[in-house]
Image (tube, rainbow, N blue to C red; front, side):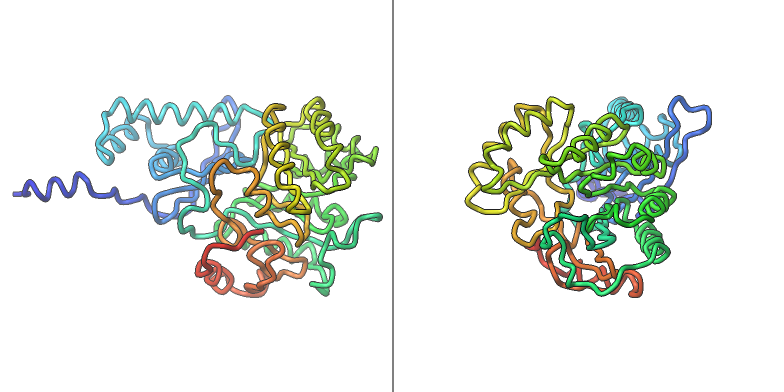
Amino acid sequence: MTSIREMIRRFFSERKPLPAGAYHYQAPPDASFPYRLHLRLEADGSGLLIVNAATVLHLNQTAAEYAYHLVNGTSKEEVAQSVSQRYRVHYQQALDDYNDLVERLQTMIATPDLDPEAYLGFDRAIPYSHAISAPYRLDCALTYRLAPGSAPEAAPIERVKHELTVDEWKAILVKAWEVGIPHVIFTGGEPTLREDLPDLIACAEANGQVSGLLSDGLRMADPAYLTTLLQTGLDHIMVVLNPENDQSWIALANLLAADIFVAVHLTLTHQNIAKVPDLMQQLADKGLKALSLSHSDPDLHQTLQSLRDQAAKLGLSLIWDLPVPYSASHPLALELAEQAEEPVPQGAGKAWIYVEPDGDVLPSQGINQVLGNFLSDPWEKIWKPVEETSGGATE
């Protein structure tokens, strides 16, 4: 007979997580909204749920368990029964929570232009807070070439001797997907200088990955080029806006009218700081919803804080965890310190890693510690030193 002590121990013991791995679901043809789901369960039971290869949700163990049953087609009655037994909650509570998750997912599926990591109130795990089997994101610097007129320091062109071919980059994207990386961002240099960019976006889409772009945006002034990127599967874009360039405003207008999530990045300098408040108002008036800010000088610390407050008043969401334009002088850590209400977990080398144009892997842009080559080295060689790297590295 089971002792009372053993019964109490079992009652308060941690629930064994579901099997770690990758799971996929495709909605039937007669569904109200066609959609597909990719779920990556970690060994600790937390998970990543990818909706329509466009949005990544970070889920804690309970939410990940609901998602697991959804992806595997378990009936809602069986889900409620299983969860009520595993977590010792009332059957009706488990059923209501599951129905709530499904309803929020349906809202997400029917909502255009979502943030690539929008949450819609899901009970979720804190990103970067625990050991994970692979990074959440791969930042792919396709080239360090720059558009005419760009500042030479905008890319570390001295670091690489050659660029990978389109087939080599496709091999990297496939390898990234196979090891469980759900989100890729194409950056540089100026990635639109690679004429094969649409092919790489299409490859990521075929894998099921969320794909983003960090660009000066100038080529988006051509509606035909923008349409090509959208049709091949681009999910979001961050534009490094040049307010003095009319083409940059035309491109932004095209993007804001399109079915894609758009953010604008502004780097604050002593030369432009007086104009930034009016510029932010102008961007909000045009319909922009997301803004990324960094500064070139620590002396602008307080000014950036006041602009953060202005952004909130204008309804502009501040983006802190997507790549910013290359510069060793204003790393992402400066941005994190300004925009976070509380300390933000550092993700370089853990939540994301960075691939240079020749395939070499760094923990992040600006951290010149080569972990291996994504194309030629086994994943175990690249990821092991990342896992063993202690916290403190930032972009």
